[in-house]
Structures are given as structure tokens and as C-alpha cells.
Length: 252
Image (cartoon, rainbow, N blue to C red):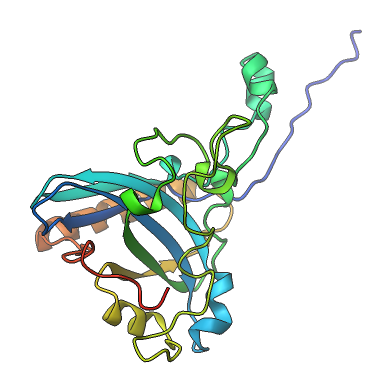
């Protein structure tokens, strides 16, 4: 009728600025290799590793192929993660008539992309990105299989499909991690020192508050300044897996 009025709807959700992992990896073996990279977000803590390992979050798991002696620079975006669910139907999709049968039939298995990173704090929440590289020819149920979607959490589609990874979910933090003398490793520093096919990098997660136009412009200016500084330094932080095919995680 003529009494209809426009109604404004505000839907606040948590989200993060898109990011990527950048690694430089070298295969020092003569033969080709298929390598699985297991990426975890680890909270900062002074407690023993075994008390906190179940709190580590698997952000991604992906496979890369290397030729003998090849050095490769890998860049992996957050939206390509193997743990996130397919895109969900949003309010804007319904409003603009962009929904279809495939989106309606989406089972939604996986973790939401906008919740992949924790909220953080205004002062900055410190943590660590830990990466472990393993031999996918040994770990993969069918190493040549094309992996798609949120396979790390949900497996592959199909009633007869097996879980692609022969390692347990959460590996290597699904169990007590010990050194060569069967003593528990206390922290990630000890783990990286003893396992040459692993590396870590410190991160800081900052909560920016409500995402307004002013916040977006301020963040863009900070990002440009950071990029300019990085270009001047002309250095990149890299993770070097020089012996990933020769080392094995101790007693696992």
C-alpha cells in the first residue's frame, strides 16, 4: 500500500583484511617431490607445548610439486584455504537476485572465511604461524588426486571417497611431541630447532574496531607505508625447508 516505508538493515559481522602466506622453499634432493604444507596459528603462551597443542588452529593445508633441486616462492591467499566453507548466501545476494539452486544446496561444511582469524585486541594479540612440510607421496591417500574445497575439514565429495590425508587431523599436534630421547618438547622454538622441515614466524593480530569508511582509508594508508618500507629494505621474510625430505618429526 501507500504507507510502505524504506527500512535500513545493518548486519555487523567479524571479518579480516585479506592476507597471504609467502614462503621460499628449496628441494635439495635430486628427485621430484610432492610436499604437503600444514599451516597453524599458535597463541602466545609460556606454558608447556603439550598443555596448549590442542588449542592450535589449522589455517590451511595444501600440496605443492617440486622438481629435483628446484627453489620455489609460494604465495597462498586466505581465500584458498583448505578449511574454509564454500561461499554462503548473503543478504545482498537475496536482495540482488543472485541466488541459485547450487547455492541453496550448499551443505556448508567447513569453517567460515570471515572467522578464520580471531578477533584480536586493540593493543595487538601476539601469536605464531607454524608451518610443517611433509612428504605427500607418503601422507596422501591418493597423492595424484585433485583436492578441492574444504577437504582438510570435510574430506572429498563422494560416498566412497576416503579422507585424503593418511595423517590424523591436527597432525602433528594430535599427540605428545617428544625429542630423540623421548622427552617432551617444551615449546615451538625447540620443535623448530629439532625438526628441519618446519619453520615459524611471529604475528600480531590487531582489532581495528567497526569497519567504517574512515577506518578503511586509514588502513589503506598504513598498508601503503608498510609496502614502501618493505621495498626500501628489499628483503622478504622466508621460511626455508632445505631438508624437508630428509628429516622426520621425532618419534611421531
